[in-house]
Length: 189
Image 1 (tube, rainbow, N blue to C red):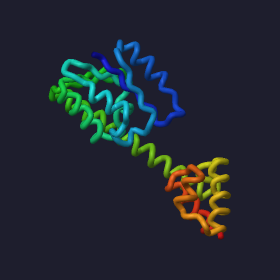
Image 2: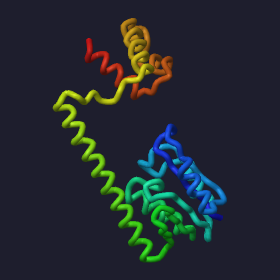
Image 3: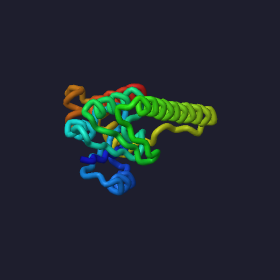
């Protein structure tokens, strides 16, 4: 069986480019996650890993779609190889099985990808610092939904009859968002 795995970082991103590449590789079944790759706790990845059997092949467009750090990449590959499956990456035309050369190559690719991501984060931080020093940086834009929630939270807090939990559940916002907004409200008062 040939399984294809695709991942976008958010639900707003379109996985179609990856799907097309995987279909061209002759995948029998596709698994698509639309969530962060910060760890391997992704529903479609987990489902695919449960289905893997000896002789199966997992096809992924690029290394960073399977994992964002070397540790997770190696763990996922070890699990696949432990089941007797191969993992193939379309972009660099590399196939990984249980050979020593495969193990060396994937470690190098994962490390390069991780280094590249740290350079991106560093450049982003430097850019933000420069923008802040020039009074240009405003941070993430605040959504209308967040502003509306902030107003409602302030109103409910002023009444002093609701618990924090009652407020965030009634507004259908997360606990973390509630406490962040509550902190902002208190800082403004």
